[in-house]
Image (cartoon, rainbow, N blue to C red; front, side, top):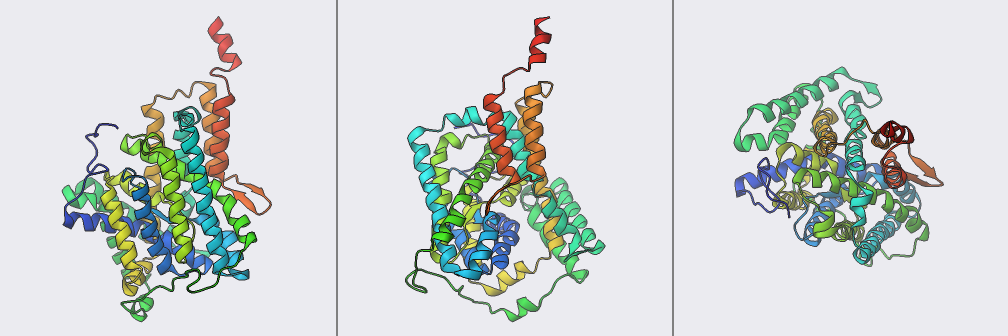
Length: 427
């Protein structure tokens, strides 16, 4: 266990005061809300269920990882394409089986790791691999942030970009000039100010908020209760293999958290626990009507900026998500936050993750004069950021997944020095 670093405001086990707790947790909820409800909206699922299942899944993850990892679990984008196809054919019962199968794949992987140990991780993932992967995790999302900040449908909108830029700059100002608790909720304050500016610019539609009732029970999809399940082998085969893609991305998120918190979560509580937590979250989601679940970069970005890594804050966000799943007007109000506000905040959140990767390289004094490091880092960065994905049949492995696997292989097979460097040393 690492000693507490002085730059940390709240460490993993630190509990904030009740008043601060609510604000800090609400900030996390706002950061992940847009992506969490976007997945079910694109697929045709119930956003309230996705929100509720993200909260339940996160609490289960915290429990299984013994309260040692501050990670938020929510709707995964990696499964959208096959889920849309399944929704048109067999409907949610098929998606549910695929979602549960994804969780089972995670649990099997966790059992294998528990049996063989995780010592191999240090050898497979040294700083020269981890640093660029973390940079890719942040910068591969840059296009999404830019699109949110500039595009009104299919058209460029300068008003969108102004709102996004002002939101980002106001959040920077809050981070730099506020003190105490106010500086800790700078992201939340930035979203609120950005929202008010968007309202003034006429970018917010309040009609859904007014039409939605205060209390609204989500239409849960529970096997043997709301539907009679059948075996959908096609659904299982189309979703389960993608678990290996999200597993890679989840491990990347754990690497970022390792660097931020000065811990080694692969050792304590162990990769087996973190995989089991993620898998259990997806199984629970599949049993109540939600999509597959994975860890969220947005929440890691919040932690990187605020230096608050408390699992109590993450757990509080999970509880709020479960409550908001039933409060129709609150959910509708948050859903009314326009994309340029989310885009402006994302500039910071995703950029801070990428900067954390640079910090890993600097802290470990990775020498890019060495050809080995230059080759590994270069391939990971361009393949990952450019999203040079691998398509095999209906399965698509993201640029991040390809870059991670390639980086691990190159690190294991390349010699420490290139032949030209050895020749230079011998003279």
